[in-house]
Image: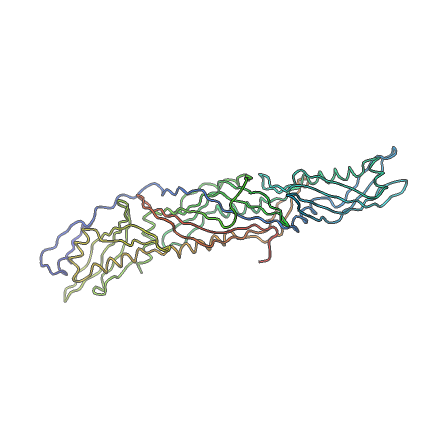
Length: 463
């Protein structure tokens, strides 16, 4: 509402009548008290996990004992045996993990200690359980020897069976712990990310509501798609957030979409925050818009919604000179239009003065030019969202890429110990675009569509 004396409307237009006051537009509605409603749709951030053959061989080699000893009963006496194995060799066939090694055994036979050769073969299936542990399901261990002397010991006292039982027990307890790496990714995603929006303060937040794992692919290593089911959002200002919930259990599912993932992110912005962002187009808080009136300027932009349109209020201030007359300018102008996004720019291309403001500007047209003021207001409302979301893209790529430590193994038979970050995560956001925009009382909501890729490597490859 303009409740000020606009004497310049008469003086500059040369109509020669007395000044008067009038309203240019209805009063701005009260600001909404409730927070902007984001209501994000669930999306999946897919990470392709690769565990190299060498990492598996090293993990198994560290977990399974390299030597052992025991006793077996032969001819009424307890006799000792010792064994020591070589490194493991892994192969893949028909969805199964095949592990082989050769071992030397010393067995007490016929009053002497005999050195014999044995072969160990393990046939198992790798799985990832709900606790983020890669385990060996239903391991089948075969211990054989072509040495006739050891066959005698096996038939009489079960020496090979005891070696087999020792290794099978270790394999059942074996666990390759993926949780530290997934937990680090989860916390990085869930931590609010502040956005560069000038005087406005915005935050990107990601709520992780579930984590899924697709089928296992064996291809000279273990490959598996992991997906974090997320509800991402961006709010202006930053929304309040409670304590971070614990990492949800892993859910094994029949299939997951592979390749680049697409995430839709709603952005909910209060009009007060948009006003702060709009002031970026006002150098030192002022926008000079007319060559004919170099001392006239616009300031204090205001934005609100009315009938599915954006209303832009601009305060007209400064001085206008005509001849020897210097008149102070002091009034509010109102324009309305529909927001649109063009090539990642937020614009109001149909921004036009209200009927009342147009009537007022016509009185000033001889000195100011209503078209110039309208074009300057449109330009001020062209917010380059692309520049800001490029910063979001770069931050997300940096935030989600981490780690270069060697992989670690936790065996259930050993006491638990702090586990360092395993392998590394490499992520990149290749494209961010604004797909739609909607006005609501108290806030504006637009949708960003983000395309990216992410991968987990164990061990981390050379960058």
